[in-house]
Length: 294
Length: 294
Image (cartoon, rainbow over all chains, first blue to last red):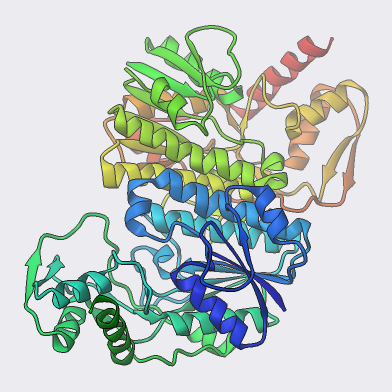
């Protein structure tokens, strides 16, 4: 298949590009930044014209371009709305007009908001309350409305908190590792008891491949690793690998609470299962940082 | 209070402007179209700069500007996303920077989607699946996130299907009345059994006044008249007033299903109750049409 990956120059997008190329697909990257290698179209999600050009002759789209930084979305909700909602609507319109046969949308487990029950499956109500997850859910729903009302086959993947080499330097992983490498204490905001099902970027990229090659459409899937790791555990695991101390500060406003999410539906319908254990993935990330910083 | 009414030149907005002026408030209209009378700022929701100018020296905002036409939102989801989501985020950002003390957001009962239980109260999950209600809900959530995370006091009113003189000519009311006046049959799409709690624009404008003058914020309220009227009943009531026949055609795709909505919370917390009975409101609308067309 000839696949367009929006945001293909970014952290998660570049993993998806690699996974699809390894699986034999022909991949074109659509991004505002140029990638390290391969076919590339410079384009902006806010331009329907750019997307109409980008989707010409394309069989399928993996849509990862977005304001993915929750702190940027917090500071500029209007920017998150522009890229995550209008950008997705522009993309879906371009896919409709160019008869793209499949769209896989990168959503997030954070769309659920406060858990009503756990583990959270795909039938759980969505009550997002942060500009990041509000706009990601709206983009998801716009994408699915193009599936249901206009016949553009679409799948949405609600991804766990992604990690892996090349991730954003303002992630808790990179901040902890960088401080440990400088011999500074790791600072935990709040109790450190809030947990995340960190999901490795390679496992996520495999989910995009499964979604692309599946005959299913019009559905939503959780793509979340089963291991639940608290911020305190993360700090301890970093400090095991690069010895340093751990201190505590006041909680940051607008941070997302913990919730346990099940990916059973993706296992059954898409055959997706994560392969990277957290300890292994963290060691790889630490080694990469050591390589970059020393 | 000095109140900015976005969309104040439009159908619902002009009712809100009148109700607030009658209650002694000083009203400024923010719209892309000029109003019939009064203080007016020509501005565009997609421009944060326009909204920063528009909200200077303003105590409160009633936000009604939007793509309110569901058929336009269906045809151009990207336009609905731009105005209903980005536009609302721009407005909230302007209100934050100019320290506006209250925002009342015009949402819709259609955000609920398929009913899980009835009557639908404000705790009911929201599962919108049409570009109109998807973007209205996202705007609502962005607005409430500015209340919760950034301290801009905000109320959201989930309005029933509004009707009244000066309403859009492509509404089912105007189409039925215009056909009846031309002696043509009234055409019902589908069985005609789908029902709506049509809510008069004067009752809705009173809800904006109640919301504005209330000390409550960070809350959502259904503002929906209790009478449930089927499309078949509406056709019969129009044909009683302007004698003509009724015929049936195939259902239109993407139309919203029926649901019973309760406004008990607004009655208790805001003291809002509708005053215009449906038969009375319809007669007024028919008389207005006869006056305009004859």
